[in-house]
Image 1 (cartoon, one colour):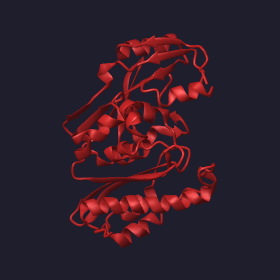
Image 2: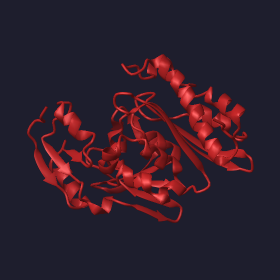
Image 3: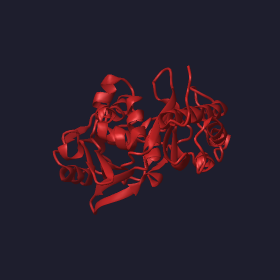
Image 4: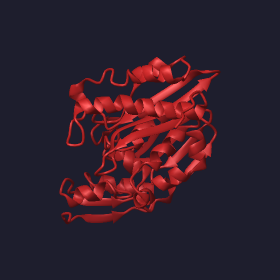
Length: 294
């Protein structure tokens, strides 16, 4: 199918993009295009104006300064997946980036476009929750920082205002944390039917800090705080992992779980527990607290 007619505008700078958004309220932003263009072709989106930000170099790249790793919103999945800096300081984000689509998708799709689109089945939102990301948005009144726990508001809905542009994502540098991402991919699309991202710090032989995010479970990425609470102060062994994973569905009543042609709500609840245990086990193996034999 072909999209309806629209006017195309190319922004060369962040300021120019903001001016175009102000001039054309309701305009859609084009970055990598993997989310927007399919919806336009099917008629689910029909903007009168399209603002292409794909050539704004200031929104591309990865920088490590002090205690923060900054990822430009236009940085591709492939660049994040291949980044030694991100791997060493926010392992869970590279793990999730590796799982997105195929080579062509990873070479073209952008991190900022992914999280701003907020598809509940995308791989990155849960990883951003686990990594404790901060989203930096630029609007008419300047920049503001949005903590990840306040960013994802619902299906395809975030805290970004219509006149704001997501310019970068800041991740706390956590070289001592171990991360892992485990998902049940949809056989038709590769999106996550359920995906679980974990980032864990261990002090001595017990868990000193842990964050766990999940995709594909409800209408937006969520923290699995009952699992985090169950692991805090515990040794990360098989028994503790199994017991904590049993709390994955706590607070997620079946009526709010996603129920579609891919999986029923009840089955998603079962998958959530299984993939929480898998992600935790992978992290524990990397931390050396669990040995997995095959």
